[in-house]
Image (cartoon, rainbow, N blue to C red; front, top):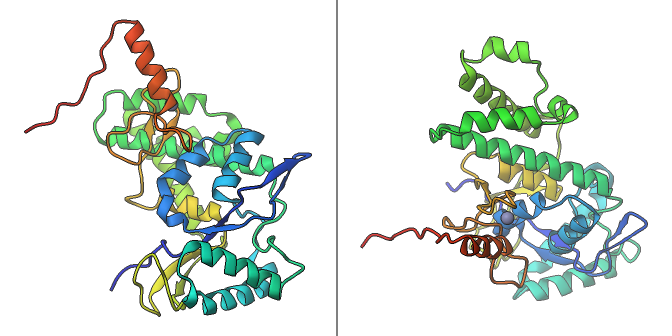
Length: 314
Ligand SMILES: [Zn+2]
C-alpha cells in the first residue's frame, strides 16, 4: 500500500498582492498550485524572507503562510467550497481551467467571501519571525549532517552558531539550560554541541507533531480526477491547513531536502539545491545564472584563481 502523498494538497499564489500601510492586500488574482511539486524552491524562498519586500515577493510567488487560517472558524465555508470544487474537478483538463472554474465557483456560491477564503490578516512581523525560525532550523540540520559526515569543522561551526544565537531565540529553540544539557550529553565538546542541536531538532519535531497543534491530517482522496498522478479514490493523502505547516513538515521529516551554504564567501546564505552539483544560491525567477556564482567567478578570475571543476570518470 502506498504511503500518504503530499503532492495532492493545493495552495494559492497571490501574483498581484501588494503592501499598503504595512498590511498585505491579497489582490484579486488567486492561482491554485501544488506546493508538493516545489519543495526545495519553497524552502529556499522562505530562507530569503527578511523584510517587507521579500515577504511580498514570497506571497506573490507562493501565497500566504496561512497563520490565521483556522479550520474551526472557516470550516463551514471551506467544506462547502472544497465539496463543490472536488465535485466539478472531474471536468478540468488543466491547471488554467481549474483556476478559472475555481474562481467561478467562489463567485457563484460565496459572492461576499471572494478570494479571501483561506487567508486574512497575516502580519509581516509574524512572517519574518517564521522565516527566521526556518533559517535556524535549516542551519541546525546542515550542521548536524556535517557532523555526522565526520567534517572536521562541524564542531567549531556548531559552537560558533550557538554562541551567536540571540538569547530570545535560544529560549525559543533550546528551552533547556546549559547545566541540564551538559548532564545528559556525552562528555566532551563534540558530544555536547551535537546534543544541543539534536535537542533543537527534536523540540521542533515534537511541537509540530503535538496533538494540540492542529492543521495536518490525512484525507481519503475523493476527487474524481487528478492530472498530477493517477491516484485512485480512497487513497490516503496529506492535507495541511496552511503553507507554514507544509513548510515545517518538509523541513522536519526524515529524508527531506538538505540545505547547503552558498559557495560565494561574500554571501554564505543557505539554500536548498535543486540538483546535487548546485553550489550557489539559485538565480532569481527568469534569470539563467546565479548572481552569487557570477560574482564569485569574477572575483576568482580577478585574483588569478581557476575554479576547480569536478572531473567526471569515464
Ligand atoms: Zn549566495
